[in-house]
Amino acid sequence: MRLTPAGLRFRGRCLPVQIGRGGLTRTKREGDGATPVGRLHVVEMLYRADRLAAPAPWARPIGPRDLWCDAPDHPAYNQRVAAPFGASHESLRRADPLYDIVLVTDWNYPQASPGKGSAIFLHQRRRAGFPTAGCLAFRRDHLIWLAQHIAPGEPLLIPDLACFHLAKNTAGSGAAPRPPRDKA
Image (cartoon, rainbow, N blue to C red; front, side, top):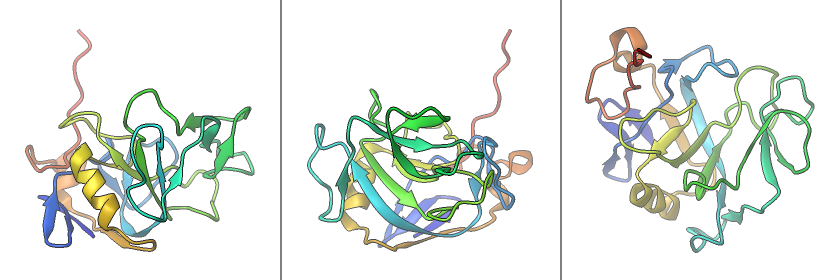
């Protein structure tokens, strides 16, 4: 898999993808909203068994207590944890469909360095043109196809593409972050 200006290339297809609102970065930090540049790997697949069938034999169901720790000062930083959990986290079992399928990457995982970024996933997009908090997001049918065809350990190359830097962003690139909106 490789991120290109046209989208994510995989097995002869090019899937439109949304990236982080902070564009691409070589210096990923917790909360920067950027997608990290580098060679990542898909290491786990999680899915909502109450909403869809397992997309692959290696997929693991998301339970009602499943969370992901995003607190850099906690020993479980960038790990799957269970509720109740007092430190900062996000729920893997969301009311919306964004995490119906989650492909977990090895970005700062499983051995996490505090503050280097957490929860860099491939998941469903909110809507076209809407950026993520640093993940890669896809149309639902494209994500299902990807999950059905990907293998554990699949490499994901995210090159440092100038078209995805906020200062050089090109409209209509397929993965460009949205420009900020005036609050007036």
